[in-house]
Image (tube, rainbow, N blue to C red; front, side):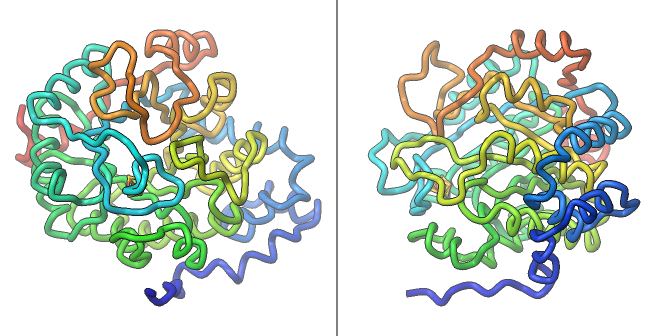
Length: 378
Ligand code: SF4
């Protein structure tokens, strides 16, 4: 038995959790506040805020337009390998799930990258499970180098690494690291991460700071909604973001809102978050963090994604395949990490955005910064 992890003092959300008992007057105050923080976030997520959805949505839309214009940045995930030694109770790739396991060999990675590139993407997020002999750090580093030759922005969503490893990834052209804590509640974290290196709560918690120290320009944070009390987790997420922004102000932060989806293993949410709850969470976070990019993946169904585009959300994926080698398959036969909710093609998704007066943006200028620093591959 491992000892249960303790939360560091800088993360502890307890001083603000009484905001869950907010009154309508507290919610109005939070909506009109010039510099909203964790207390206001808790009030906007309290039961008293339910009748204020329309006001929250309008505020979220106005702030999103002020900071991001009428644009939606586009990115695509690419699953490199599904070997994993961890026992995350909520994941289809956990080591006790019966799944064909494979990793893409470098020539296959190039093929998948080329297939993605053809659909117009310029930003790719490379995903793997835990560090394993099949797909460890050196393999990931090689994949980042391959991707950086073809894409303007390369992100990695993988296991926590050392500062030196993150520095090597940055040198190879990686500009973003995503590392979700899944839940900040130490007791739930311990229960859900049944075995494996991911059981180390504090190592994971410190991963984003190590990435920023190493020169990674953007760090993505998030929780998996459904695992724990969403107000507890949302306040912790805000505290984590503030902690990183204070110490590493040169780097950027992005936040994502994945909800638990059906997956092999059939784990179901202990704290289910419905669409109205998710929308309110996005609006509330946009109100307290007006200039941080907020992401929504293809886990959600099309109608919901359409409604959220530009309404707090500023960055989205489309046409995603969550199985290893999925982009090369006409109709992927293997199961992915989770079920995709929005299966529309990239052109169909972009047409929807344009119909709503939004512009999909595929190109950003990360490679200019990267190449100026002498780390790009041209
Ligand atoms: S969530 Fe990640 S670390 Fe956990 S079992 Fe799935 S692939 Fe492995």
